[in-house]
Image (cartoon, rainbow, N blue to C red; front, side, top):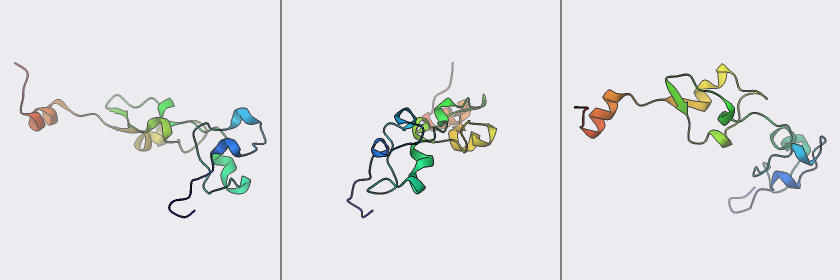
Length: 101
């Protein structure tokens, strides 16, 4: 699409598994939906990063609800995509110049 053309919403696409499979709030890759291009993205429900439990030293990235894992279920291979390192106390102290009493 050109820069100002709106992308077609996924809910305008006919999914083979029925309307319940459509991803609400997602767009096709063009101004109209094309089953060959958009079916996997719009119809086949892939897990979002918000469904992945990050390791203890990490937290979910801010866009976790809109970021899809590499497959239908998230796995440890999605950790870098879905999670980011937690701030450590030393970095906080250095950044803000305060320490615990």
